Amino acid sequence: MVRPFCPPLLALALLLPLACGDDGAASTSASSTTGAASDTDASTASSSSGSGSTSDGSGSGTTGDATETGAPVTGESLFLEKCASCHGPAGEGSKLGYEIQHPIRDFSSWVVRNGRQSIEFPGTEMPAFAVDEIDDAELELIWDFLDEPAQPSEGVALYMDYCRNCHGVDASGGVSNRNIRSEPPPAMIFHVRMGAGGTNYGSRTAYMPPFPTSRISDAELDALVAAVPTL
Ligand code: HEC
Ligand code: HEC
Image (tube, rainbow, N blue to C red):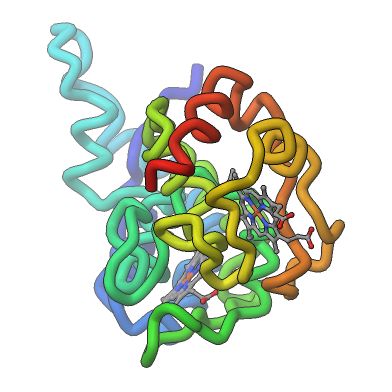
């Protein structure tokens, strides 16, 4: 039986990128080696930290160890290291960058790989991250982390979550330059389900992601559409 634990050597390797912290660019090489380290160190570490405290059923075993000795590389740790300074610790947004919870993954990945000149955040811009800094699997972990918070169910909050960044805080146009305040509900629903612009992710005025029912249910979309004229 293999039980989860946090080997001391792995912990050390993981503390390195955390210690190098906010500087972003400098810490990549350290974090990219951790996968290999966890495989090789597994056998030695189980004897020193794995056994012991679980027999009394106190439950302090696995999760307690992980937080004491240094967390494994997770979507959260990657996000805190590379994104939170501008997007806030949970992706809730800040003065330096948009709210980016519940990401549309193909579009969002394009933005991360290519970066973006900012319009609404003067003085900041979205940096481009190459695969040697964040690989594709790590990027998926980041998107998983940003999908963890519960999705809002109320109309205005749904609009802020999924539409605001492109159509503006009051739906009067924003960076897409498309005023949707008086769009008739059937047309609104049609556009949200269909999207526009295919994979032309770089065009602010042509690309809109399609939102399937798995992302925004019919009931949620009705609430969203009803909220737009009230913004
Ligand atoms: C230096 C600040 C900064 C950092 C660090 C940063 N971003 Fe951004 N990000 C921005 C700004 C500013 C924008 C808005 C660009 C624009 O106007 O389209 C943005 C836009 C985005 C968008 C598009 C949002 C939308 O709805 O248009 C995504 C997705 C995103 N960032 C993800 C990330 C991820 C993931 C990371 C970490 C790997 C990250 N960002 C790191 C500043 C930053
Ligand atoms: C990544 C940016 C982006 C996001 C996110 C986005 N849109 Fe759009 N939207 C656009 C662009 C660009 C267009 C114009 C596309 C075209 O040429 O048809 C558009 C078009 C529309 C239209 C048609 C407007 C017209 O003039 O015909 C509606 C309605 C609309 N969006 C609603 C929404 C709603 C509601 C949401 C949130 C669920 C949303 N959009 C999310 C970028 C976006």
